[in-house]
Structure formats: C-alpha cells, structure tokens
Length: 330
Image 1: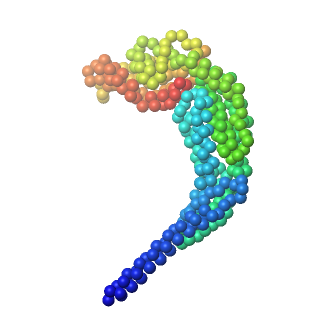
Image 2 (image 1 turned 120 degrees about the vertical axis):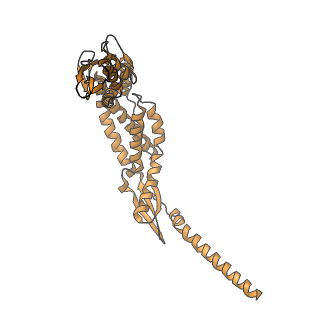
Image 3 (image 1 turned 180 degrees about the vertical axis):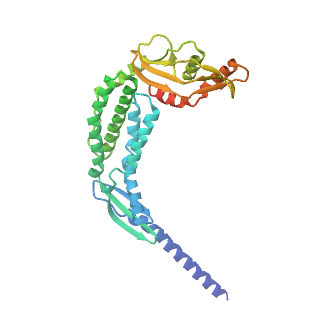
C-alpha cells in the first residue's frame, strides 16, 4: 500500500516537473530564439513580441527608434543654452514634438523584417535597419533647417514690429533646435558631422536682447475712474510704465467714460463699452481691442450704479481676448 502511494507521488512529481519544463521552455523559446538572431554589420537591430506580426513589428521599430533617441538628451541640454526668447513653454512644446517624431521612427518602412518566430499565441520578430537608411530623414531635416534659418534670422534682425520680430526669433529658435537635434542623431548613427557655428544667430541673440531690454509698455490713459480700473487690471499681468514712449507699445483707452441713464425696468444704470488701442511709439496702429458692453445697475442712485460698474469691469469676459493679444507683445 505504501509502495503504491510512493509510486503515485513520484509519478505526479514527474508529470509536474515535465509540465514546468515544457512551460518554461515555451515561455523562453521566443525570447531566446530572437536573441540568437543578429543583423548585418552596420545595421540597427530591434526586436519585439506581440500577439500578431504587426504588433511585434511595431515594438521592434520602437526598439530601433529608442536607440536613435538616446542622442536627443544631449541635444536638449545644448539647445536650452542657446534659447533666445526665454520661452520655456515654447521650447518644451517644440522639443517634445521632435521627440515624438523620433519615437515614431521617421522612416519606419525602412526597418526590414529579418526573422519571425511563432510559439503558441506569441509572435516574435527581429527587424534590421541600416544606419544609412536611419540617417536619411535627419540629413533631409538638417538640410531644410540650414536652408531656412538664414531667412528667419534676417527677418528677425530687420524687424522693429514687436510681434513680427518675436515670431521671427521663435522661428529661428525652432530651426536651430532642428539643426542641433539632427546633428546629434546623425553623430549617434556614426556620421562624422559637427554643428555649424552661426555668427548671424549670435548676432540675432544680441539684437533681440537689446530690443527686449529697451522695450516698454506705456499707458496713455487719463485720470478717469474707468481708465484707472483698466490700467490696474493690465498691471496685474504686465509691467506698465507711464510717460514718454521711445521704444515699445502704447496702450490708449478709447472713450474711457461711462454712460449713465435711468432704466425704467431696472433703475439707475451705468454702462461702458470696452475699447483699447495699441500703437507703436511712432503712432503706428498695431491693434484695436473691443469687448461687450458692461453694465452696473444701482438700487439707489447713479453713484451706486457707477460703483457696481467699476466692480464688474475687472472680471468682465473681454479680458481673456485682450490678454491673448497683449501676450503677443510682451
């Protein structure tokens, strides 16, 4: 009886061991099989495992792109040191866009299937991409950036209009970033290439720095109550100065007076139609900002209506659009 139990236990143990070995072998087969497959010399190797060949190939391409992407960390540090306008948000948006393009592999079609292994429901693939093919889109990107940056720099240097100048500088910054990132990737792919020094870019940095340091936003409103409310609101977001305008943006409130009347339905009421001009120091009109009528209704008299109007103006809906426009000139 004892011997039968021993034999039964031994048999169960043997079956369990066999199942474990089979399962272990099965789970390891795809990964180990892929590990034995190499790519030709000068090629970048990527591997992936998925439930379909398409899914596995996508992972293999992502593996290749991650190897290319390693060069971009250095590009990020280098570019930040050359940032002109100080727009961290702009830099992060553009850099993340370039990172996303690289992560997606710009020329994914050139990553060719080298081998495929199928075990059960799992499919593993190895893909290979030549370094020459990997370099092609970055060589093209670099050439386009080289061709365009001089135009952007000339535009920035020639402009006195603050908005146009700022946009030209941002365009040049973006192109410089594209140059840096392309060169870094190409160096990582084994290309003997150096980032070209650009004296004009340095000149633009100096020019824009001097332009920004002298640039001022000047308030040319009067002593009216509404004018004081407007400048107080604008001053909460921008540095505002008064006096003579020599280099910058003049802000001029249009008709900063309230219109008060006795509304038969609501009582004493004061209204203001928002309007603001932005002009250069030479009096060139840059923009005219307008908004919906703001109304304050009093219970007792016009003074009460005026107090309510002045309290409503700083929180009126028109400020969102006004600040969107003023942001372009700060």
